[in-house]
Length: 468
Image (cartoon, rainbow, N blue to C red; front, top):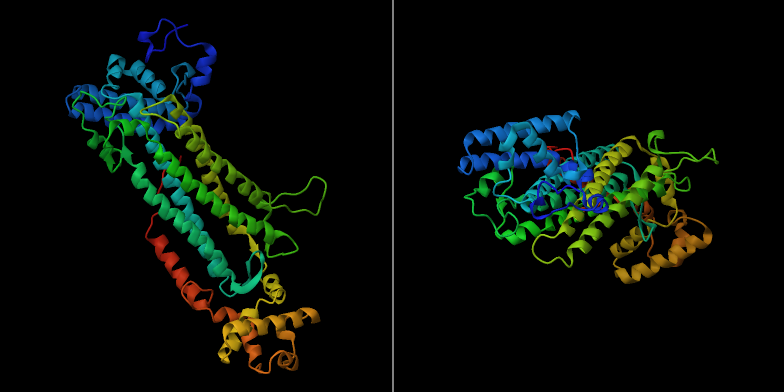
């Protein structure tokens, strides 16, 4: 067996074939190629500026790395599993192209800090993409809310009819969940964009490096204060995975409502053919499979977070090979979240809202009971007493098989003499929505303010981001 070119000087033989297959990461970490080349270019330029290598050699390295990147983009690059990972594949090909100068690239760095920087760049690029897709989805929700400001439907607690709300208000609740996701990602990126380069293996290096300039060149805000922490920290991946998990949780909640609303027993929404499937045996079926799959894929992202938490829980300082397990879960989680956000945006663009069915359903469940209680409070009755009086009216209506507003005034007065003709205006469902103008409420002016706030939030953020 041949020894590995990057570390084989100490060894007479290379690893067993089974071990090579078990330990390689090139099959998946090649996703980090653009970030590795970007970081390596910055490192090469810094080595030249600091006089660690000549300016000519630094430029040769930068040009050679660009040539390698062109090969990767075109598909001409030959990946070699025996070289273990993306980093050694790139360095080996660089050396083939520029000769022994390529061997100077690794001066002053270890794969420990090299991997850390490349992966941080990749995570940051992915988070930028999540942010861009979240903003697009928020804009789509805002558009659909704007279209349905006048539609009303039952708002639920405990999955039971509670109070009438506007459809716009209901949809905007998800926009505010996603806004928190955007803000959370933006805050996390401050901690992701910290460069470990210069830490080398764990103790730093004797070369006169300028790691701050490398950090600035790749768009990072600073460098690590401790070299051992720099090469062993994976908080940035865990934090990104937590952010992704919350995003998926919010999508899953929306999926759950779409699934319920698409059931003909509700009939609140109709799915477009492009976002539904049929049954192999029941020709009438139109299944919300896309929403169901998205709800199910949430577990994959949660699993990536829990998996890496478990990897890290017993990790002594500094770098350990366990850390190779940080990438596959993240890569899968990132693809899952990005595709889910894009698919949800498309599904919401084409979903149909059956607003007539929504309004019809208001007559079931006594959603105006709170209005009746508030009406009695307006008559000077303490709320707790008004609650009990309303409860008796609900019991009467339920026994008669009628909604509250269908009870006659005589029937209401039989419950409590203080009911008057004016109660019927209060029991109107649209009036109930219009009355709730407290900040964040479902009233028309409150919803208009929410839409204005949403538009301002989106206008202040460009939809930027690199695909990952």
